[in-house]
Amino acid sequence: MPAEWEAMAATWLGWPILENREEVWGEHYQQVCREFALVARTIARFQRCIVTAHHSQASMARELCGPGVEVLPVAAEDNWLRDCGPIFLQGSQGQFGAALFRFNCWGEKYQPYDGCQQLGQDIARQAGAQIFNSHMVLEGGAFYVDGQGTLLTTESCLLHPNRNPHMSKAEIEAELRRMLGVQKIIWLPGNPAEVETNGHVDGIASFIAPGKVLCQTAAPDQGDYYRVMMENRRALALATDVNGRHFEMLDLPSPIVSERFGSERYCDCYANYILTNGAVIGTAFGVEEDRLAFDTFSQAFPDRQIILLPVPTLSIGGGSLHCSTQQQPASL
Image (cartoon, rainbow, N blue to C red; front, side, top):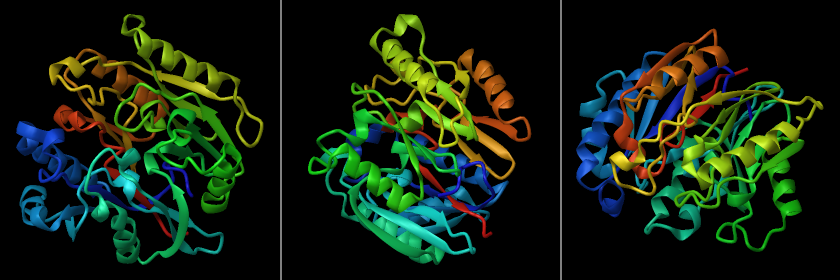
């Protein structure tokens, strides 16, 4: 699996659906759709963007996104494409593949999810990728790779009994190596209190270059969340990558805006950003920390345009931009 800062052919973006997920979006659904359309149009400024929308929502998606964005009708019940879609792979001789893991809707949290389970196959076939299947439950937001053999993940998610209770930690590591071509796995504590994903790493830390990590921080007055994030940062400070390097770390501020929407699942962090060819796209929450986040992204990615979009409403679903997308690497 290539690193996310490597050249891309396209970005796949999931589209929200209200049916069977009304408890997630509720009265905010129309605004959430407008925000997702803004994300799609912004991605399309830099590279191909394909939106996967439930058959019932495909026309709306086309209308809101405009002619510069492709729309693929699918059966998926959720927009969190990162977690139920394929993981694209590259071969050393230019081969193009897709790793497909099992999806159980974050430990059977929502029903139905048959369409989401099928989404990986739908996208991989549409993209023309050779498919490699795994028996293991794994969401794409649960890990990052550096493209050189190191994988970053969390114990609170991958070792949670609602994912793979029949597998040991060693067996999970072996399957990650087999499917993704990594050699070293770094385990962070994660965030056991996070209610939607059980502590996906894409809300905590991300590789931004070989030997460099971008960390989501918390303020001391955030109580348990602050202590949890400090534990993750300490674990990173003690870790080394596959080449034995300690990590250079940059810190993102915490926006602290979840009370605005009154949702315990609200994803109020800057860490859930995405990369495109030439740009970083993240969320502007309308608070003073937005400027600090912009400056940190500029330091982390000095050669890319930094775009913070006013899309705070979509975070009520328990995820944000990274959770909703999957990058397709460029051909070698």
